[in-house]
Length: 239
Image (tube, rainbow, N blue to C red):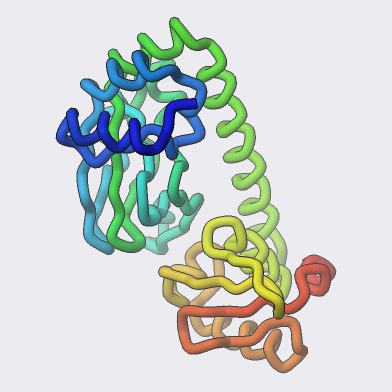
């Protein structure tokens, strides 16, 4: 494993902020390969709310979240936004598109100030030829996305608002959760409107159910952006 100090030097030499050492997808690559593919990397800083890419754009590069968070979403027929995934540090999207070029079927937007590095197809091709295990990592991530999509379909298909909000809170734990002595603390960068978009319900319903869960002792609301989950098991029982 190459040291963090060396990675920083490499980033400095390339005059890019992209630090490949923190990206699980590329963690198995040696120093020479990392240095070589850095030539095909471009890093862009996005402000909260800025569009990263749009539906219909050519998907000819890998998008890697170096810091911050981005949401992947679609607009429904009736004009509502439906969040499909939330990606955080180290996550990527576009891997399958590099294996077979296509167009994006969804939009991406920064949920907070976010640093995104893009890896061009030519650089990615050289990686998977020399390191087939990278393809396996792409497939593993694809499997995770399928599971998340199945979870989303399950949340959307249920008629129970309790189940939708409980499932949402459990889903948000991975990207926003931190273990504390009192439970799992969610420090959110999404608002109630976006929570509703992710759960497939109205903002008002999210707010009402969160207050109900607090009265039931399942969670504690700390301001508008932090939620302490006191009992994961109780939330699971609601689903």
